[in-house]
Length: 232
Image (cartoon, rainbow, N blue to C red):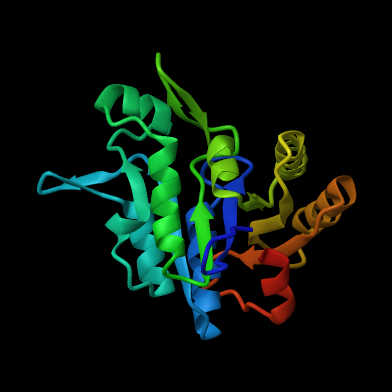
């Protein structure tokens, strides 16, 4: 959790890999929190693969979250670094310039957190994602998680490989002394033998809970008191 003057509570959304649905999950979590009448905000340190409109890079993931969740803060204010090339942020920065600085990321997140009671911070790619790698500095996604003092929620695909990815991701995070709150299985099909077994097996092997199973094309997540407490 974060500790600032507002006692803002935050969670960091990571994943077993890219294209698992972190942005979709972040949007639904925020939407559910706001539907409870609570105040919440969004943050993403680095975003790559942005489209350019009239010479300006559009942070598409952040704009999607803003629109789906119903956030009032402009998307541009919720992302510290936006790159056009659809590569890992470290490579995009090597090509385009403007490499990430941990101090700016911490300051930008803190500024957003000061406005809200709850924060959802979204990662880039999987948990082993280089954000900056050049002659001067190396910044990994896990360095950002540590800098923001956030616990982790891991988004997992429901298909083959989900168990392996969940166990390895949780183990890597815990090896770095990062706290994992649990998992969200995205694109889950209730009654599907493989999906149901993945949920049970992930919990058995990691000792961590699957907090939510989100069905394909879900439009909201009900944020109960128990889920809110488990997340934050």
